[in-house]
Amino acid sequence: MRLNLSLPPLYIEDGAAIGADCVIGPNVYIERDCKIGDKVSLRNAVVLRAAVVASGSAIDGEVIS
Image (cartoon, rainbow, N blue to C red; front, side, top):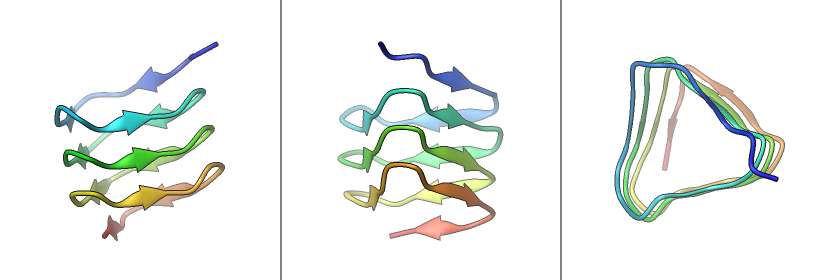
């Protein structure tokens, strides 16, 4: 089951893969070809092209490359 919560403002480019049970936003930008694992929390973050965020990560106020 994919239960994702999106809190605007946020932008997710086409081609990004988002796992299940994620909380994304506010203030998040995810570039194309990124892989976001399951149960990830992203706030105030930029995930650059082709970056990988491991399952279970909690990211706040970072740029991920």
